[in-house]
Length: 335
Image (tube, rainbow, N blue to C red; front, top):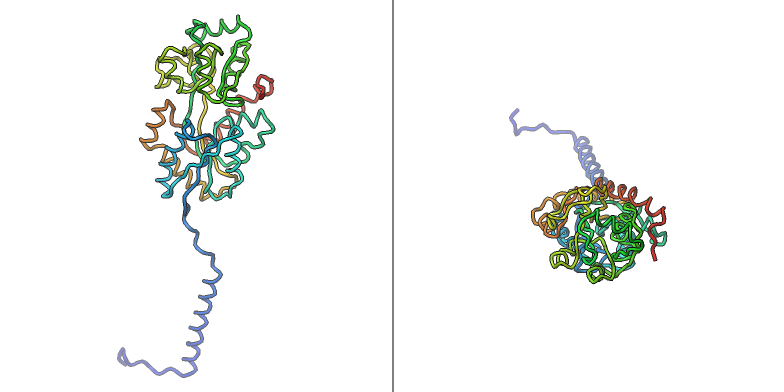
């Protein structure tokens, strides 16, 4: 029998084969109808990054640089939305209440994640309400004093403070990391000092330079005042000297074990899906290696931080351990 000479099958066999084919088609269609749709790749649309401070400040400038790099790696724009007010609470409330889908994330700093939750029950939110995503950079402060005090070193500052009760120190605002950091420093050095809160760092520095207040912890913004001789730098609050002020020694170099340097990081709402968290983690890790972003940090006088959620969780825990005793002692009062 040749290859084209097929045998004749009985009619009933042909009908059975036809029925089998129809049954197979029906089963296939049924499975297709009940099968879940394939999970879409995340993200499918732009992401909002809430900055709970005004545009133009340090946190905003850094966040815009971070957003550009992260957006490139996610393939979607990361759009900054400034929501200032209530010491950062308004913006973070927006993040806390957002759907846990990764399309709304926010900037976080020690003041909003640690200090205010510890010191002010009215603040109402804390690290337990958020999913850490990543640190971006480590910040520092520099202890500056009124030039009229004729103080040039940390030992001189300590001697003056201990012999002159009632010194005053300025901060960029009540409940800020500058406020808490200076209070912790005064307590550690055994100095009696009174807090004077300002609405922002610039007016605070101006009043120290004018002699209305005697000292403060300031950011890299103080560099112009220092170079102009209007403020005297005493010590840098960092683990090592900073490039922006290479001639200013650290506290540790001058015999005082004090490091209260801060950080800038990012969080999302609680219960972010694992795939979204992993995608954000990868994007932030890659972004923080970008030369352009690292140069932005260096130019501003900051240091790139260890990326990833574990490092941010560790930073929060360390700050809680550092500042909880200060709050419990009553040394910090929020007016």
